[in-house]
Amino acid sequence: MDTPNAPLIRRFAEAYSWDGVDHLPYKEDGAAPFKAIARQTLFSEAELACELRYFEMAPGGYSTLERHGHVHAVMILRGRGRCLLGNAVHAVAQYDLVTIPPWTWHQFRAPADAAFGFLCMVNASRDRPQLPSAEELRILRADADVAAFLDGAAASASTEA
Amino acid sequence: MDTPNAPLIRRFAEAYSWDGVDHLPYKEDGAAPFKAIARQTLFSEAELACELRYFEMAPGGYSTLERHGHVHAVMILRGRGRCLLGNAVHAVAQYDLVTIPPWTWHQFRAPADAAFGFLCMVNASRDRPQLPSAEELRILRADADVAAFLDGAAASASTEA
Image 1 (cartoon, chains in turn brown, cyan):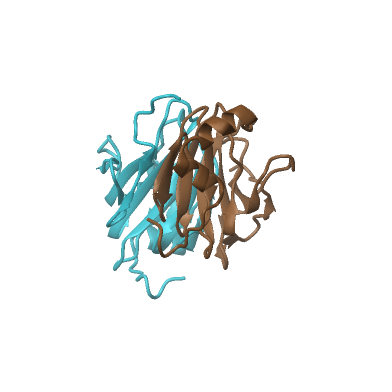
Image 2 (spheres, rainbow over the protein chains, first blue to last red; image 1 turned 135 degrees about the horizontal axis):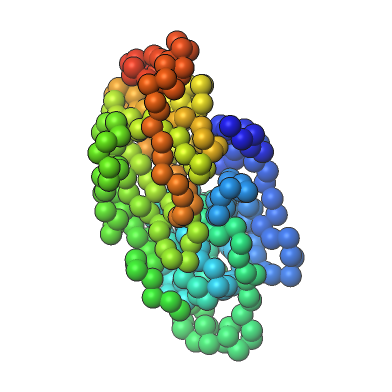
């Protein structure tokens, strides 16, 4: 048997944390805009071609609006929230599955009054995200629903979806 | 944007199923012993180096006792149950993480009175599982706790762990 880096069993603990799993900054690079979101890497092993991460936003938090060549395979784990995929806003709830295809603008947003968390499976080897240019952002915002989403128009956990 | 095979959003539905996700036989090969377990492939895409599957056992169900060179990265999603890892039996509950290292004998068992389900991330390209030989099974069963586990000694969801 190999000796893995992590214990074979890691217990789920209060407030969506796991024994022996660190709460990490969402991004190492502070240049990208985001708010009130943390990252926990649940599985990252030399023998695995993907990683499984858990991202959680505090009420009102959001991930970076970005795109990249790699695919995200997402399962909502905690609560409900909204995601932008391309030029469409979707309400999503616990255990819903979200596929983010290559080069698709995307962002997740928690409701104003509750935490929102999701699992994300991603290739261990992957390209870096791109941020929208001013022109790309202008095109995205031409859709009123997308603009309202990006402006964080208030949604509460009880009213959405 | 690529056109993926599956819709970008697939809703979680009653009884731990997902819109557009088929309930599949646990194994295509009926030669391996297992009981009352079904497989749903949540993510399997050409651009992803891993797959994410959901396995669920009915009360009293169990997966095949097997080992292989590839790693399993497991998160319990529904209920609680037990797993054999090497020569140790572990009680596991919702959202606990289980790493199954290469060439480690493993089996999951639902309690007698409740369903038990887990997510499993695995490399898309992987080796086939091996079943224990009579001699390997004899060695495993030399441990009384392991033998009781393999014999399905009754555990209920309310009493274990």
